[in-house]
Length: 390
Image 1 (cartoon, helix red, strand yellow):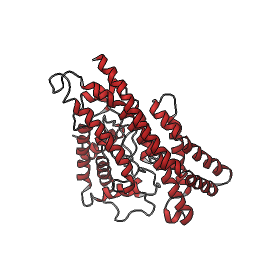
Image 2: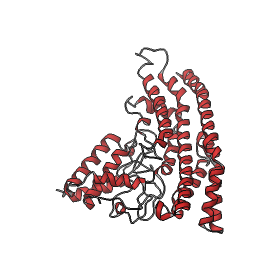
Image 3: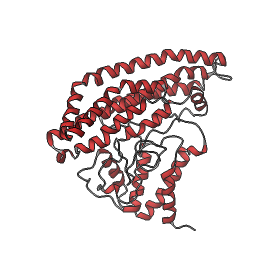
Image 4: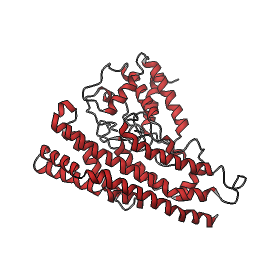
């Protein structure tokens, strides 16, 4: 019979490659992270490291909640929690189509998501000297994220989620309708999503909550019509697939708008943080200029570039085109850094950010509203196509 320690090691190795069918919540991922840390390191430190990011502090707080639990009990609880999450979220290898998992914070989550959580904003961007990165605690359970050789995620969880959101947006109409047909009304994909850019209690996360909340309502309507339309229901003459096909482009456009928000929020956050570092110094802000370029600015530029690739859906590619100014500004700042130095490059980046505020605050929201209008109008076409084939 395997010892508890051996069972724990085996389960840890399994979770590193586990790909859930649906995205685990931030809470569940943090729970796995905390139990793993308690198992391998014992009680968490009483104080946060001085250079800990917001995401780091959230992880340490979750770990600190396990204070007093023995390492043996933590190992057992970790295995039990892993088994529970596998039952709840399923395994992608087992089949079942559903949008790619998007959340990520630490400890158990599916393929290429951003944090090992939800997210959730910087999952693994803290320096490697932070206690939470010691030992071998997984910083992201899913495979396929951007790590350095120590397994630490090198970009905010929002940016890390973008490939997953793009994959979700590529879901065909037939696949979307088939997924809704087997999805209970209480188990919608959107209802499991959480803000990826900022903490839940941050007032600035309201726009992202609004995007997710509206998408949840659209999904709820799509799932509800399955119980109201079709044979044996109140409206038997029309298949529920007609109404669901009408809402399919709206679902996709909300994915594109979420991508738009993640990149805009990351960019504006970088401008603000870089401004603070230039004014007050890296020691006070705990955010060196080089780290901002490495973990936020460069990944943002490459993310925008990836949105315009030919294999992306039209909605995602249009999102990439609307964000081309972001990529150009990031690349401009990088070229200045290479030629003159990081200080001048940072000043250029911040200056351009302030000069173009109107584009991010006024133009992009207007484009998002136009996109929703177009999605609603095109929905009639897909609804009629489904009606003619039913």
